[in-house]
Length: 164
Image: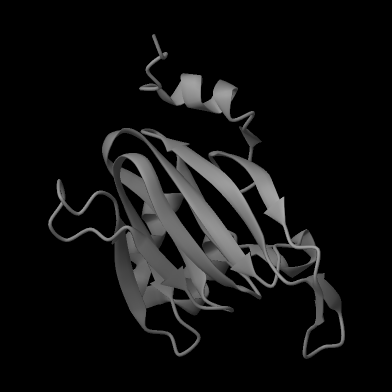
């Protein structure tokens, strides 16, 4: 009989996930063998992908990366991903099972250079995947402090404060 994977801790163990700097747990499971040269002449792999898991009390803190990031729903509850685009506009993506949650999608695209954060709004956990093109690199990763976010986006204070 196959073991049921129905808890966050079981998934963390089974998928060998480790704590992520922005919150939650992750593991990179794919890295392209192809390389590209970015506009700033840095060399990066063409793409990468991770598993990413958040438990009920966790969130993904405000951060940005210089790659497009595609989030994929795998298992669990409902996730809100707030994205502040380069033009300052704010949108909220809902990631989850659209059969259970009518306004959810199975994937969400975060544009390169956007600042974004995510939190679980229903369920005990959510297992997602994130694909980046070009690959994720900590050299392209910025984790934002609360004061910096509030100074830059005062109109979004109530949403910003949910992630600190």
